[in-house]
Length: 408
Length: 123
Ligand code: FES
Image (cartoon, rainbow over all chains, first blue to last red; front, side, top):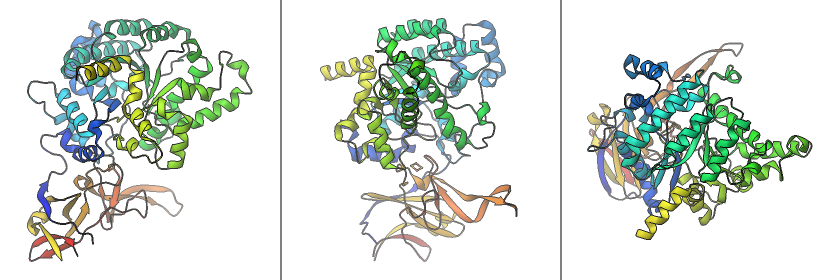
């Protein structure tokens, strides 16, 4: 029996579905970790967090431009079922993850938007300085049978986000959703929102059947390369993907589904020489974890050496493109085998290519400690992954951080 | 022996859970089906507040004689404490992690003296 000494206090504990959910209180143990590890002296940028934009469809739908779609969206009191692409889902693990029931009831402080309150509380608790926030149900829109809906909703969502919420807090950043099916609409998004404060990049949802090397995308890539703004591919899963028809569990579909489209898009990008055509285009692969990277490196290298004729634009091995031309968000960091993780990080040049992400409040979120506590990383590598690498990927963020330091 | 008063037994039996904070460690004390438990309130995964979590019977698969799945059900004999952050589950009786056998939540001894519940904080 260890000596615990005197208790500082004993109090009743809030359990289960609390009245008035508070994200900071839910993350109180994260705040203790942040204090113990001294995160306040370290720049922490979270490149992938989320909100549940469906809570605010009442505010978003008014920005839909197409009058017929707007009429459709506004039926049934803004119930989104008629315009979203829905799959069976068990993110909340049958109620075991208590925040899923609480977050919709979190109240705003003062006059600010509830999202501003919620995201500040989560950042404060986790120890995050800047956070890129993405939508949640809309991540499935790339599978919607009517591509006009992706175009219309991404426009309406981005207007709401950049006009009503983003200006309330400098710590929140956005990679604007591009309706990838429609290149003209995507270019309009870049031109309209690219210069807005808080917008630091652009994002395509990965779950779609698009061929990312199609000629129609070249002017999009050229435009982003010229602007120096990164393009993220955010993974998701589609339970209705035909390959998954025999998969009965959320765990099965999620484990494979969040990697499947990333494997396909990264392969197409490399084999078709997109990094050679646009060497300064920064591509960030979001939310597929890291374990797939050594797999794809070895598969592609092995076959490339026998079929260089099929990839004539390449000037180096596919694995070198993966280690030098792509960036990766860290979550969900697969860490049950430390030796494998260490080798993975070495193969992918984690010190320069890896960016910390929490994915909070989703079911498999990661705290910064998943990076900070790794025994094989040196101090500089940890600082790079937690924040400094993001400054290289997001020039607008770098300018803001440097400007702040100058003024301090 | 040093012990720290947590609560009256009635409060624990009514379903209230209590958090005792010592320097460097927090302990959650709660009751379930007539027993009282005390565990460190720090999940072995990423340090979540495991003591706030749901208590549910372990999910078990029922197979027939040909090893076909008949159904799943909640165990009546084995309850689990489930961390509310990501869902790591622990045996309520022993604190053993369901997914990593042989790994345990830190458990503390409870003393019930005439309806007052204490955590034993020093031998
Ligand atoms: S911290 Fe408890 S399940 Fe992750």
